[in-house]
Image (cartoon, rainbow, N blue to C red; front, top):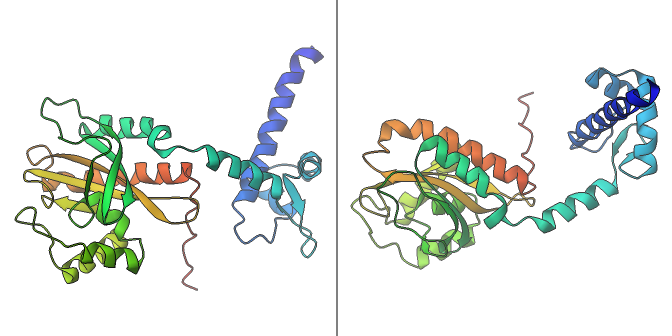
Length: 267
């Protein structure tokens, strides 16, 4: 009886210890959380919290803050995080998320990285339809006329924008943005709403909806998009697609180590 119950007890303790680590990971200020705060937040007895904190402290996953007496994540968690980030390969590790997005939208999904003033396609999942996008991994497209390019550019530096403008903005379709003023206005809208649209700006008959992907540094060097012919991607579908593509972009950003800033308080 005792031997059979032991694995379950160990598993329960491990889950509680992991819950403590996750809770402490939400402390972005670094002041630490007291035993009482941890107990209340996770609905654990203070004695249980104290018992679980001991091995976490001894193995340097958690440390006590001298000033407050609270507990916060320690350097060992940073080492593991760096090891994870060093092994992340965006062009390969995010493919299943792209496949899931393609399945949910029934359209082609692209994953790109910045090569200012262009973007480079690093992964792609084709739609199941007979009529598909003509694009290949390794191809490049201009930033100013693509939803993925504008998604990145909206969160990039002034220098990057200047590089794009200086490279030229020739008209590719009847609706291509061709002036710096119009591009700046578009980028401001993208920053405000969190996603971008290529409204038949890069290729005739094709509409795309994209969202930026952020990395551990908070920078934006990647983006994803959902693309399809106008017959399957009318403007009425854009709200739906924007929700799905931004949701996947957030998932990829988290896997690339991005931590979204906490909303500012109005008080």
